[in-house]
Image (cartoon, rainbow, N blue to C red):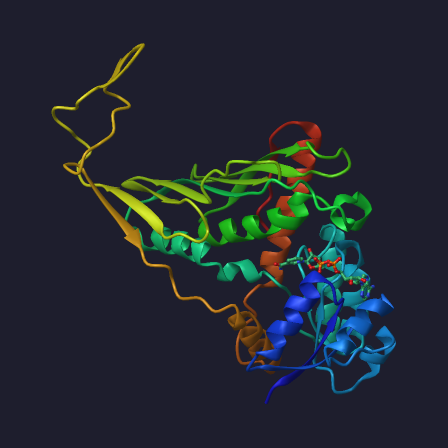
Length: 351
Ligand SMILES: NC(=O)c1ccc[n+]([C@@H]2O[C@H](COP(=O)([O-])OP(=O)(O)OC[C@H]3O[C@@H](n4cnc5c(N)ncnc54)[C@H](O)[C@@H]3O)[C@@H](O)[C@H]2O)c1
């Protein structure tokens, strides 16, 4: 049987959850609640029931799941009240403003015996899934480093995302997605973090980040979020012991170049106006094989399907508390690194 859902916060992402729920095979949308009456009215105009008070959502015995889609600094209070009212909770990302808040939320979920997770919907992005598949198949050997970038040119949005007190800035906005994705790809323990922020369009919050995560096996994972890029760099780039893979844009397939023979005879040098080079001369098909990877199958409805099964106790929740804590710890370390202007150690135990 479908679980009854209420979406709290009927803004941009709340509307996404509403549309999604209306097509879902596992949840039944009971309604929404927004702190702004005009947003409740907007819902009613679309034929969606809107509660007049948050307390009415909490006291509605029919509600099984509350999805929280409100600005980041309000997550903790709303999530905790929902859990204490006996509801299971999906919280939008970033789940909290810091690790202390997250731990309070997790403790409350455990105490109340409710399922609590964060909406890491970008685990269903096919560009990410393609890179994960290439790495896991081992077809280009062992991973050396991976780079994940997302570039836009419009600066930080002019709403609460530009305000520090509301949890604004790109690390908490896009960074959280890209970090979570790369932690799904990388093996081993994370040992060090280095992060730099951009402040191009404002001085209050980071409007871009460059974050390097270093692992105990020597592998590196790099995340870049830019909001002032008028030419985009590739979405993903991976180097491995037997080749490289790239995805130029998230709408495109992954391209793989596999090295079939490291040794080359008769390398033709590249001649430029200032000299010549054999070291940097491109390889030919004689020592490489180039191919594309079909875009993997993906259905973002699987997020809610899994959550409902977790509520029923028939499947472990997809985004675990430990993964939520690990991502939050990375973001905390990134803030610290950017503040100090230096690499910081990362304790990857007790996540
Ligand atoms: N997973 C994703 O892909 C994704 C994408 C966008 C945003 N988000 C996240 O979703 C959350 C909301 O972002 P958004 O873009 O929808 O913001 P938004 O400003 O468009 O909407 C937020 C809504 O929440 C309402 N609100 C604020 N405080 C409230 C409260 N205490 N109770 C009820 N309603 C309240 C506001 O009135 C507003 O309508 C953020 O945490 C953001 O990071 C996630």
